[in-house]
Length: 317
Image 1 (tube, rainbow, N blue to C red):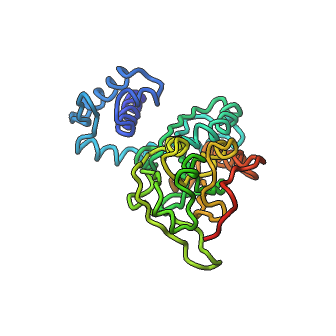
Image 2: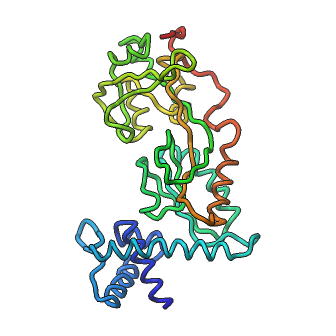
Image 3: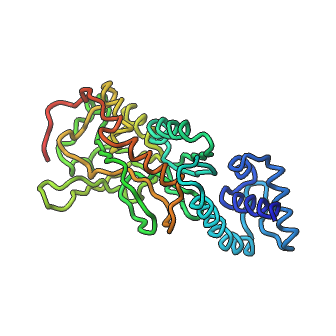
C-alpha cells in the first residue's frame, strides 16, 4: 500500500506540474523514479493515465477522472494528519506557494526565508509566476495576489495596500510634455500590462468623494507581461506606465522615472494571501499566513522615506 500511495503521489504531481521533470523537482526525486512510479500505477490499474509526447504530458480521459477523484482525497489526508499532530510540535510536510515574479523575488523572498529558518523541518516550494494560477487545480496551498480579488471561492487575507503610480522618464517628459489630466493620457504613448486585461482601461480615483472612478482607454504600442520589463521600457523613454509603487520606487527615488500625474491617484490595489477553503486549516498554512501578515504589517518596505522625483508643479485634472 505504501508503494501504491507513492505511485499515486507521483501521478498527481505530474498532472499538476505538466512534466515528469517538474514533478521530480517538487518531490525531490529523479525523473526516472517519477516515470517508473506512474508506469507502476498504470500497470496496476490496467489503463493509460497520461499521454506522453516530446513536448508535454497530459492526462487521458481516465487519467483526468482519476486525478479529480484522488487529488482532494490526498489533500484531505494531509490535512487530517496535520490536524492530528501535536499542537506545539514542529511544522512538517510540504507547503506549495505561488507569487508574482517582481514582488516575490524582491520583497517576499526575505519574509519566506525567515519562516524557513524558524521551521527547518518544513519543505517549502515557491513558484514565481505573474499569471493568476489555478490554486486548487494546480495543487497549491497558498498564493499571493495583487489587485482586486474576483474569485469568491477562495479564502483571502489582506496583507497590505499597494498604491500605483503614473510615471515616465525625464526624457519622455521633456520630448512629449506631460498629461494635464486623466483624459489627456489617451493622447500619449503608453506601455500596458498584458496579464491584467485586453481592453487597456486605466482606472483612477474619483474627482470628488463618492463619485465614480475615472476611466481612460489607452492605445499602447508596447504590451508586456512583466512589471519590471514595463518599468525598464519606460526608463528608456518609450512611454507612460501605471505600475505598483513597489516596482518603481527605486527608479522614482533615483530620478530615472518621474511622476507624470503626481496629484492624481490610480485606483489602488491590495496584496492578499489566498488559499483554498477548508474545514480544518492546516497548521503549516495558518502559520505561513500569520507570518506573511506580520511581515508586511506597518509601513511596506518599498515606502522608504526618500524624496520622490516629480516633473514640475503638480497639476489637477
